[in-house]
Length: 141
Image (cartoon, rainbow, N blue to C red; front, side):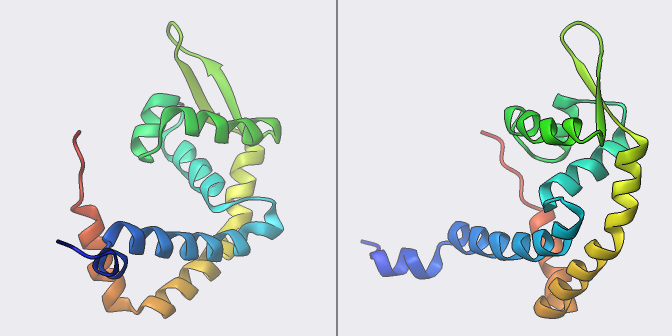
């Protein structure tokens, strides 16, 4: 039978979640002066690249639950960085605003600082292997 220690020492889910929290803190700290968190910056970038985009399509692209994305869109809309538009039927589309575009541009140096720190800490070769490995994971329930 597998021991608790084996699980604690070898659980890839636990290790990945811990690393994710650490890396998220690095990006959050860098973006904090702009009043953004890493997930908000990612949403702005996704909206900029895909917009106008439905909430469902953006959630799928960002591998987020639709309800989680909707909850995260509210402060961005309130701050004027995105705009929600009615689409077909009950579909709502998200558009980046001029203020949102400006926030993305203002955040690029902070993002680059965080990115550089993460790359330095992980090492270029490890980042390459990690990126390849993570891109290969898919889950179809």
